Structures are given as structure tokens and as C-alpha cells.
Length: 203
Image (cartoon, rainbow, N blue to C red; front, side, top):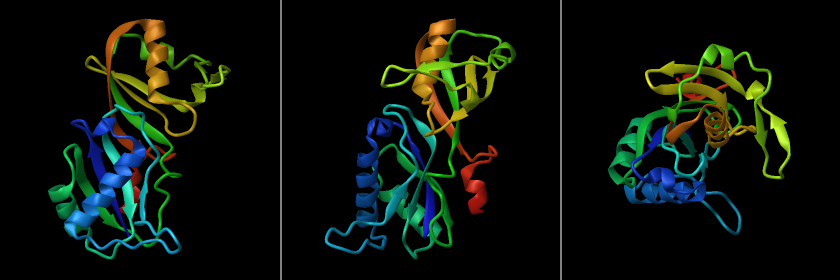
């Protein structure tokens, strides 16, 4: 099996999670990459994605695992030759069996532009950060905010991923509290619980 790291930009950020899965499957077929299929009445290509991102948010750090015996560097080259615009493979690693491509990525780093400046040290002293859930109830997600710091006019933040705090809600609350304009968000890294890049465990 191999794990691919790919970017989702230049329009690909508007593809839904299942559409990304279909595009990767088509790319494998067009490139002639031999991928194993599931057994049973409805066999499907064994391709696994990391947890879904919000629609419209560009990412420089998405991951998928593919059940294939082919060379990672060859797969990376073929992927980039046949993948649709906006999906580009930037890393490939061979693994011994399945890895926790969804379960191990529990934090993510983002760069956010468009929020008015605020004192990050004072912000991190807060004991509450309340978001409204889909059912209308409130939830304190302060424990899912790990880092915030200004890099020029952009806010670099590390927050929980796939576990109760979406970047859209985070920026929405910041705008409500501090003001700002049109928001631009890019996911820059996918992180494990100890805030290491997910790919570090693959090398």
C-alpha cells in the first residue's frame, strides 16, 4: 500500500469529498495504476481518504491511501500526469498495511486572512470559545484551539480537525468578535495529536 499527499487548489477545493474519491479513482484508471478491489457483489477500488474538508477551502495537505504494489515515485508521477487540475501529488510513501489516515489526523494548521488584528496572547487566556452546533445547542470548544499567532496580516492557527471544531465556525466566531472582511483560508498542514505532520510517521 502507499500513501499519497496531494493538494486541493485551483478549483478542486469546490469538489465534494465523494467527488474527490471518484476523481482519484479515475486518475488511477487513466494512468494504468494497478489498484486492488474489494470483494463481494459490488467491488470498488481500495482508495481511502483522510477526513473531509469544508467545501471551498483550499488545502496543501490532503492524504489518501491506495492498495497497490506499484512504486510510490512512479504512482506520484503518473498521478500528476493524469489528475484533474487542482489535484497534485506532492509526496508518496510505501506502508506496511493500512495506516490511520483518518483517525490519526486530529489537528490541522491553517492560514487565515481577513480578520482584524487582535492580541493572540490575550485570546489564548480565554477559558471559553462557544460555537453553535447544528441542533442549536452551544458547545465550548476552547480545548480544541491549540495555537494562534500572526504571520504578517495572516493568522496562523492550529485547531482540532474532524472532532467538533470546523475552521468555518472558528473564523465565523473571530469575525463576530473582532471584525474583518472577506475571509481567505488555506489548510497548510495535517497534524497528529502531538502536532507532528502526519507524513512524519510514514518516512
